[in-house]
Image (cartoon, rainbow, N blue to C red; front, side):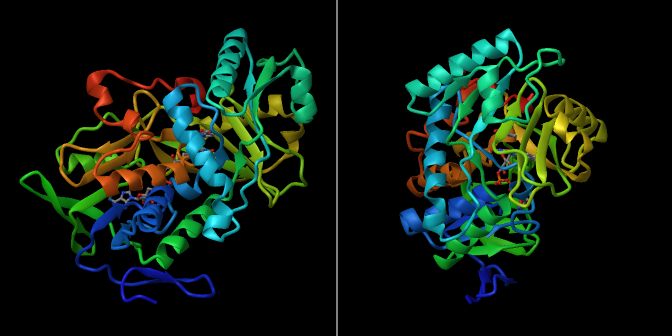
Length: 406
Ligand code: FAD
Ligand code: PYC
């Protein structure tokens, strides 16, 4: 075990230690994006003098609160490119990280419930194919064939008029993904420091010099924010105003059931998305709570409405019992797309705004963020997501594919 940071012993327990006084790179936030960034910095660029500072415990934020949906069927070229890059990394991740993350490409259905939905879904499938992203359009009968428990009766409030299917989409076990990246980064020499809150920054003549934490001052000339939901709070300590709003996003699981659901089903109109975990729970998520908040909880009426809608689509869930509900805090940008790259402060990097859709981006986000940090400038996949787009107006209005965000 190293003298600083946190290490895995053979039994899988963590051992925390004091952070060192200085690092080449400090990553703020020990969620999926922070951990994957640290891993790719070490693996792809040989930058191992890295600390990941986490104010709570590893993976205690959105990373282990999300509904684990992975897909790359986004509408616009820029989004399809970065999410498809991520999906390709997912497809080899268990081998690369030597960890069973329960990655399962069981297919993601996006249901269409009215003519507008049908048209935008067909448009998205066509755009996906042009970008070499797999996608199919299914008729209601084909939907029922693929997922027999969906109610395709025309008599419900939101009848199913068809669906898009991305067969390569699916799920992975989110906490295991965090552990897998943490273990792999740790093995390459990265320090992962829990219970270390970043509370301030020292910037001299426009250059980052250190971060102030609950465990003392740590020198670093490169600081990479990966603190989903809290980035605007950190940026405001530096006098930077970011176009982000923090909202609660809730999810729930049922008690354990026999296998009934063979794929992932999303309905943007009904604001329900559901899959069944390998253990047996139905995993469901809601739309964001409309107000801003930093509390990791939401309002019960949102869950109530979600369940009422879910039961119309899946009558078989009527007798399922709720086991747990929880919330996370997601940061939503005006064009429902991430903000990635450099800032006006030399040595300060941004990775935020993934909103309701950043789990699927975990490998891709870390991969391109590490590239940006190592080279001091974004590569081609990250470049369109730069902060400057809010000045130039080159927005990526990705609302079509992530409607739970608004
Ligand atoms: P986090 O895990 O939140 O990591 C950020 C970390 O920063 C936290 O651990 C936090 O404690 C830490 N931090 C904050 N401030 C500080 C500080 N001052 N100092 C040190 N550390 C700090 N995405 C999908 O693709 N598919 C889904 O199905 C999906 N479902 C979702 C369902 C829910 C209920 C929620 C809440 C989110 C969902 N998401 C989904 C979105 C996804 O979870 C997030 O976009 C993604 O996890 C964000 O990146 P992260 O993992 O690094 O965030
Ligand atoms: O982005 O696919 C997604 C998603 C599903 C649920 C929350 N986000």
